[in-house]
Each structure stands twice: as C-alpha cells, then as structure tokens.
Length: 156
Length: 151
Image (cartoon, rainbow over all chains, first blue to last red; front, side, top):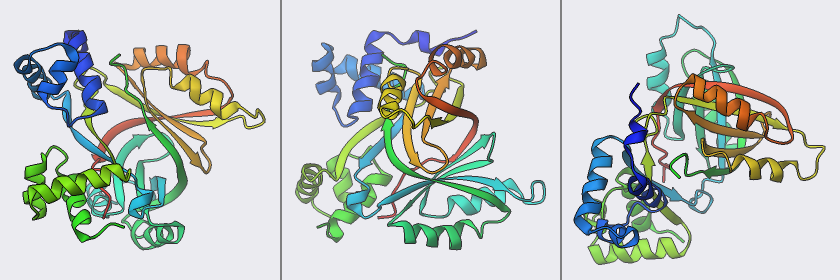
C-alpha cells in the first residue's frame, strides 16, 4: 500500500507547519527560518503544491468585527429521499451566500451546513426564508458555535 | 470603522487569498500603496488575523474524516477545560468547536483508513475525560468549502 505521507521529510513537514501558520511568507523568508536556500525552499513549496498537499489558502477574519456575530451549524435531513434529487438540493443550498460550508455526511443527518448571520434574528430570517424553503428539506438541528480552534494536525 | 474600500479589498482578498498586495490592489481598483496601507490597518485592528495554508489531508494519505459530537458531563466544574486540554494533544484532531445546543463539542478527526481510525478512537478518543455521550458522523463529501463572508 502506498503511503504518500511517508515521502515527506522533516523539512517538508516544517514547511507545511510554517505555511499553515502564515501562508504569506516568501520562499526566501521561509528558507532563512529553516536554513534552506531560497531556490530549494521554493522548489519544495512547488512540489507540495503539485502533489495537491498545499491546496490553497484561507483568510482568518474576525467575523464579529465584520458584523457577523452568529455562526450556526445546521444538521439537515432530507425529508423525501429518492424523490428530491441530491443535485437539486446541493445546487440550491450552495447558492445561499450565508451558507459557508456544505458537507455531505453519514449518520444522524444527511448534510451539515455552516451558516453565518449578523445576529440571531438575522439567522432566523436565513433559516425561514432560505433553508426551510430548500427542496426536500426535513428535520433541522441547530447548534450555535461558541468557539473554534483549528489544530495543526498530524504533521508534527 | 470599515469603509467601502476596506470592504472591497476584503471581498477580493477572501476570493483570492493567494494574491500578493499588487495583484489584490488591481483586483480591488486601488493603488498598491493604498492596498498595503489598508491591509496593515486591518491587521493592526485585529480584523485580518491571518492567512493560512490549507492542507489537503487526503493527499497526505488521510482518507477518513469523522465528526465526533460529544456531550460533556457538566457536573464536573472543570470538565470543559480538562476535556479541551486533552483533546488538543491528539494530533489527528484537526478542529475543535464548542457549541450552545444539543451538542457541547465537536472534534474533527482524520485517519489513514478505518483501521487507523479505530485505533485512534480506542486509544485516544475514548480515554478523553468527562464525556457523557459521543456520536460519530462520517464525512462523505464536501460540497462547498469557501468560507467566504458575504461582506
């Protein structure tokens, strides 16, 4: 069995850790930190990109300060399985701007949505006008996000 | 506090987080100097907290992702803190969220395969303190992942 992770050496792991902390670092700056030349740091970053391991970047914004005081995770069950096409549902749900992520899951629910709203009454508006009117939507469970931590993951 | 220019820059930056200052300035229709100044201000104000690389764990051989929804035994006063402290020490836990609702905590756990997941579950997850209930949801697919705020 191939284990792609085994191909990464310690320096690759350090690069991944550094870039998940701050992706705006140049190859030169990264090289100085890890005692690599700029070209060899650059080549390693390129390789990690080409392998699809570095798949992009994400901004960390203070949502509250930007006016989005509430994040709610919705567990969503489709009511009429088999009759509503999953594609129709997925197309409709991804088009809602307040819906940040849509995950298809197995277990208690069919989908998990991450929804941002200005406040609870704004969330209620999104829920009633946008979510509850989706094709085939059944049970909905809501959990209001209190805190969130992203961990570095198994690259240490 | 934020004006239209800040919002325009943040809107563009969210959609193009790989862009450098000059490129972002062009996208936002401002000069590079203005763009740099605005970004500095947004950083200093704590609104722009960071720009992080996104790692594709699947490309690293982690094929399984499980969401564990956990109810904490709240009769213990330090239950939350102790649980969080120990959960942070599991390398395969890539996300920890706390909630108000039916679920107290959600952990995102990645594993190479089901056997590896079973091993993490038994040796690391089940030994976490103060859990009253635990429910597992298996990820099938991510349909939308751009965590872009509608600024």
